[in-house]
Amino acid sequence: MREYPLFIPFEDHHLAIVIAVPDGQPAGLVALITGGPAGRSHRYQLWTRAARRLAEEHGLASVRLDYVGSGDSTGSRREWLMSEPPVEEVGAAIRFGMDAVGTDRVATMGNCLGSEISLQMAAEMPHCVGAYCIRHPVLAPGMLSSSLIRARRTTVASLARSNPVLKKAIRPLIRRQKRMPAEFRARLTRALRHGRVEFLYSRQDLDSSPLLERKLNKLARALPPELRGRMRVEVLPGGGLQGFESIEVQQAILDRAGQFLGETFSEAAERGAGSPAGTPAPASEPGQSI
Amino acid sequence: MPIDEATLERFRRYTDPALGISEEFLQPTLGSTSTVAVLSRPLHSAMPLGLVMCPSLGTEQTNLSQLQVATARALSAAGFPVLRFHGRGYGDSRASMSEFSVTSAVAEAADAVRLMSDQDGVERTGIMGTKFGGMVAAMAADRTDISMMVLWEPVTNGAQWMRDFVRSQLLHEIVQTGAQRGSGTQRIRDEIEEQGWASIRGFVLSREAYQEVMAVDLLTEICSFSGAALVVSVSARGRATPGVTKLTARLRELGAACTEELVQDNAAGQLGQRAALVLPGVKMIDVLGNVAEQVTGITISWALRELSLPGGGTEDVAAGSVERKASRG
Image (cartoon, rainbow over all chains, first blue to last red; front, side, top):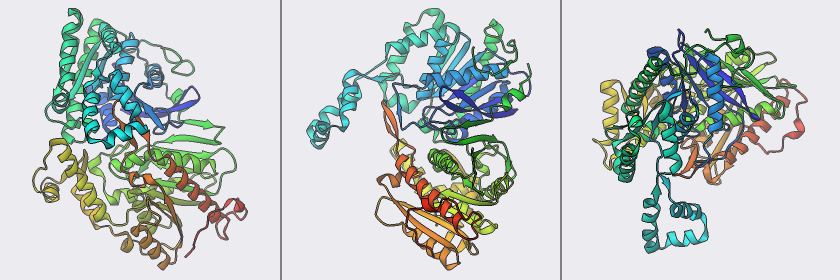
């Protein structure tokens, strides 16, 4: 396999990306999407290792990127708002990668905020055959929680925190007021119409948020029958999925994601979704269009 | 369809006319391992001094990467070519975490210095690093003919650093499970001894790395460096950390021209510990931006001053731009 570290233009910036390519013709392209300022290789080289295994074991190319203001990409970003995921940047990296390796069969893999971007890309790209979402923040703060979180730096909030009785009364409100946004359900449904989606959580994630498990189960049951089989929720025993701070968790992610993506591209090839190698070579600059 | 390598080649480099720099991806072999590096260069009138940035270790490396990139670009905009690279077990390096050792890190740094020295217009090469990377930079400078080094809050006692590193795993276990497995640090030492490695918050710490880091005492390790050194202490208090003060004294004892500076910032304790403050479900905030600006400014002033001194290579370089007071040993 070979790797190409590149700076690609994006608006007024340059995104640092690495395209990993298997020795033979790629069966497709996987976008590896971090959850924030972790950098394109992610912690403990997880995305780098994933890219190499996808190339060597499944014949898949991949693209990993630094967002604007992180890693080697240009620009600065002092704040990362969960409500404003850098979807356009990922889209630019995917388009460049698809053109560069000559495929329009693509899948996404991300964690945390990156998994939300994965799902958004899967919903928006008709050629996306799958999305692997690690620890997707499915539940968003409700309106009351959002207001309380926004107000946490005010004098009133400071006074409330200093009062044990008020603090005790407010804390459950912040924790309980969570909802599954309608946009999430809509995106999932759109993504499932042309691909597969798998969510990965740890047992600890679900135990600490029973509401999450209930909502996911309810969501799966509410899907149209033809889409239900394309969504899966995988649960790793124990904890440690946040931050990938365990060797066993890292290994499990690489194994399960590799299996999911390998199967997903094989199935897509069988039903003729996208094309692995039909796109002509870029005449000038890759990334201008899908 | 084969990859159009010629097209991709054009995207290895970009220029930023506003900042006055270009950056280029390189894929060199450093310390016998293929990795990825970025060479930042000023677009106009480059100084004859090139700087190499040594990466750190474990999560510290991840947490410091943004500081490193911002610094490289600021230094380059000020006229200095700067090389940064991914060390073993980090980023795009071909080597895995278990292949890291102090020996390998120093070898990578020495190879990176050679790579920088081969660049057009570079007459001298300096080396720099933060925290663990500062320790590696100092060791590499002492063992080679590098005559200039910049250390930001360097680790001076490997054993202390390793104890904190191992404790972070124990704390992680308590947070994850509510209880600690076995008898703390001794259990991790036993794991390293018996299986040859241990997981420290997801980092594969090999026996070799553990033993080598534990053995480093920078105050005795450095025994021949007599060049120019800038040692910056980043502290929340109004005084330099004890390790930095002792290192400065040691360098002066060896005859080095050592400048000690202090950056006081409330976020000092976050240096290497975390890259962002997370408000769950809402946002992440960069916590080291102010520290980066301060230490970078100090470093640029110092480097310009060093170049303007006799023997520094350039007699008339921006001598008037140096405003900070520095004590020379």
